[in-house]
Image 1 (tube, rainbow, N blue to C red):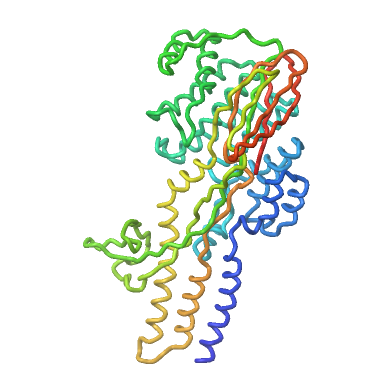
Image 2 (cartoon, rainbow, N blue to C red):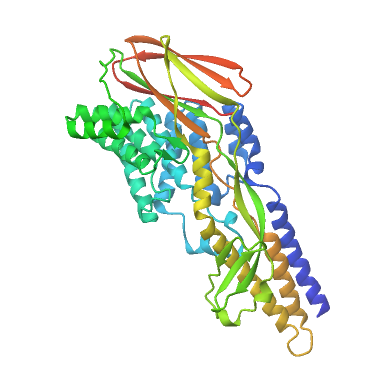
Length: 474
């Protein structure tokens, strides 16, 4: 029996060692060469690193790979290829990435071993890049389809969280973009509806902020302007009062207008933190997990007989939980001038804030699932070890299995540190008039030390609404 127990321990030790080695590095560390080249602006080399990385090539990471592939192709100016990958990502999301087998993997191993299903704000960002790609390919109708998909995404989010105001159930920036897309197609009615819906999200907050962004003045003016264009005089007056501004219509420029997006920095990375919990029973007999300080209390989701659970069998659980770490952008601010006329950039999307807050919103639910999974393993381990000595003799097989489960549970615990990390940390924008023909757009970038750099791009004024996104990802 001793030899059998030793053999079992060796098998579990080998499995545990493999799990431990795979758990030593986070997702960011495993895909670091790709992200370093993205940050350096070396996009061809970044794509090579992405394509040869074995971790992101696994089936469970397919959605991540497709989003990153779409992103790097967009950065390279390969808009058709970019949308090929984003469309595949959309198809995966439409098909659904949840299954019984995938759920079982999460119970037996950890959430990092399950299929990556995407953060909610990442799904909105797919529409942002797809729409831009279509516009750059002169496929306005396809861009409008993407605008409509933003509404469907918002409805799906609302259904998911029962339209609770405290949860991220919509995206103000995505709705603002939707209005811009409709307007580029001369659909000022739907443009007004989109702008109004975006504004109403901000107005739900007393200080008109939404996940780290204050309502842009550009949006306030767009709501009033499109209301007037539709002849909605009452609505325009009401919004002027609400926003505290008096909008004065401006004569359209002969060259049309440019909506300029500045994408700055890189999205936060996920790392792993270890938390320790005990299982307790309250006076009503209910089971809860609590940390050492007693500041966190999480219900135990258990399908078995709760009265037979020995809380001493779950005296200490180590929980590996994801934590976002922000990456400080190299550039702290930017401004642009078009034909020597200055324009102010305003922040419209704070992906850092979205990442931190949405993780916080679901933390209790995710922690409950992780703790329940670990507790079930611990109870099984305790039961086996108790059964091994139940008749006064030691059963080497049961004892070995008990210790094996203990080792396996300890070493298989790993946080899910995956996310779409080539997204920008922030997106700012402005809307500027263009003259007919050549226009010179100067972007002045400033870093934390006050040093400035200037980039120049040329835009042809065509009389229509145009878009341009500029990325500084270091």
